[in-house]
Image (cartoon, rainbow, N blue to C red; front, side, top):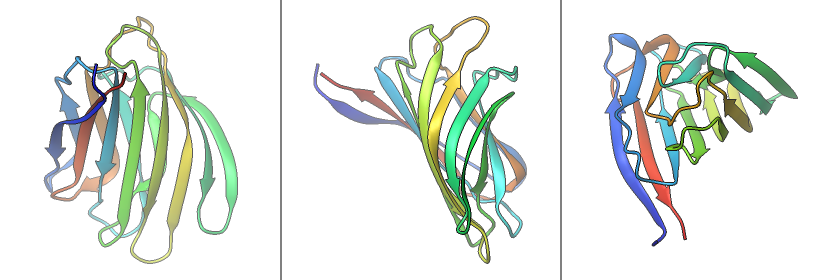
Length: 167
């Protein structure tokens, strides 16, 4: 099998929602990477809450190291989503979140990794990296990813997916 990094698709936000969902994800790759660039409609950074397969149970774990430009600290938690703090930047700011999920097409629990940067257009910037885990009651392939912002998402915010095969 040849090594590939293949663009699978993109969803684009409008100006009337706090939710972006990528569904119907191609199941023919070994791993998947989601690249999210989400801007909120208000000044100031806000959080993005990520769920898989529409699952909102307390099945998401996150352990990360964060630096907000003045303080570095670690955080670990179990929640009903992956709450990636301050990664949805305010209008005029920048944000980018990469989530890598190995073996996403198998019906198993899913460990993952993430890297996030974000900030508003004035005072707050954030850098995070860490480990994620999705452990649903019934293990399943990842077929959708939903980003729910704590603020309205502006037009042209995106989630892109890339399928990965390796030898």
